[in-house]
Length: 472
Image 1 (cartoon, rainbow, N blue to C red):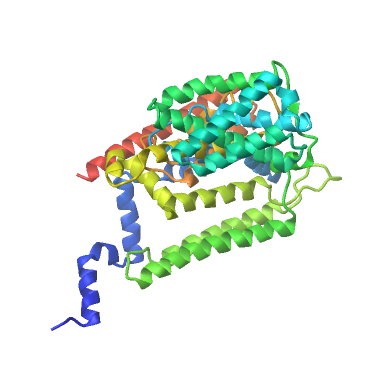
Image 2 (cartoon, rainbow, N blue to C red):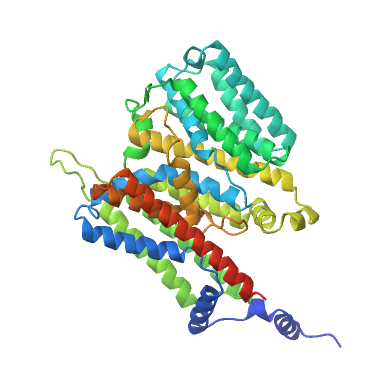
């Protein structure tokens, strides 16, 4: 006698009880603390650290929590934060990209040169360097086709076309050129790591030095390319949305977040799958809505210290970072490509046996990282209004890697999220901004930043050890 539909459903639920058991609010809270004890800390240490830093600097400096400084802090940290978001993809595989900072400097230099030389890269670079540059783009196209990374081939082709055609100066063309050069650099890096089999540390260390020389070649020792006179390029990191646009951004961001979180919750609940209690999910959405509303309201107030000038609205860097956060999170969590990254980062040999093209995945993450580095270059160059031979150098890379690790991304691969780079970036931006307001020298800033990164790496190592013990 066949089972009734109800009996069949109950039998399926009993077979997969661990996936279908509903939790009460109390059980969800206990489960969360149990996971914390098991070493699954996520971004909690970074969030708590950020809260402590904000309180400490607010006490020590009356200017720290002013609207003007908060908006400036967001713009200051956005460039390195964006570079860190790309590095998360590399770190998920247990790899490293030491050249991301100077690669971003190359992208910034090419972008600025195109503007100041009125689109004439040939005249700006000189014949020999120009043809080497175009040859590099063509080589990147060939390598990308070989590895079947079509986006990389497309962007490298765009960079070559803009250079050869001599497109007139246009801010959108220049930003596209920077992004395209970044993707081409990522193709070359990825090929050397995945196809040649060189360790990523060695490859990217060599390229770190190489790109420093390229920047110097493009700009010249002691030279500088000014882009502050180009309104669009300058506004990327220094402009603000209108007040009405700021509230539209709030509605879109919070509404989209609520739709995704609540939609997934009720879908899983309707299918009998395990999901946090509805009050917990609703509280999370409400908290995001309240924080977003307060932040939007505050940034829409006039924060200009000059009575003759009005500065109000959410800075442009906020929707830029939010858009990249959404895209990166969607790619990692909702696409086959993202699942393959986690699989390769967790166990490359098992991923290979499962039919995943490990070589292609390893190469592609460097394309993502270098493309994000180019976007970061656009933002930080816009903030200072110029590009000099130090672009992307100094502590740019260290702060970017530090942001990803401090936020909760593991250096050992297999664990991390794009949001970790955002949280870690806020921590480092807060440290740099707060110590600057206290007139601390660069030595103190470097020492404190290094200790924060060391603490984050220690927490990561200890949590992994704890998780390994708990899983036995």
